Length: 286
Image (cartoon, rainbow, N blue to C red):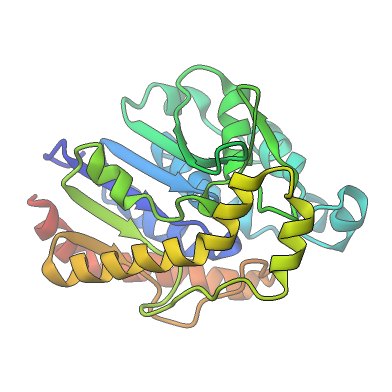
């Protein structure tokens, strides 16, 4: 555990790009570097719970699945469930059967872990915790990872929710508002990346979410909010206020399936964190 209770770990999403983050986190766990507060979005939420439960290698195993029978991404499930990812596989069979999740370790960790979802009614981000209920924890992870248009909404406490990245892709400002002054941010895009405004997808959003005007507004303005956050991150990084780890090689697609490509991206995250370990510890004041 870091000596400073004001330290936070912020994890961006990005589909299978999140395997980079799992490499970074496995390195941190190997060196027993822990944070009292963790916030994760989408794939970052999945990484967050594995980090809090202390399961080195679990996220990597979930993402890099060479057994096609256990794969959560592919044409078969797209045709069957009309979703890009097999969410039942990811959030039911994986944690409870195939790649067991250590619920007891998670609930007893003592860490504060917030997983970000987007409330479809308000269009705003919700930062949710779960300390007791196994199903609710996985439902929150599912909601945080449910990409609009390609995954269904998920009901959390009676409210339809989708991908937390719609409303807050990188919750570093939220962490600061919560009182965390030392923020370590793990990104899954290269330095200087900026999201483009909706093109052809705008018409699809309008058709699909006209009954959810606040969600629609958040979807159409996501690029603005995301890019504004990246500008702040790059500014604060230069000023030494936050510590950022991001890929320094070409990133993979959010739906990459090639085990070799994903393994190389994972290893890049692990090796990069090893190289930056001294700088991180200096920033944290350890």
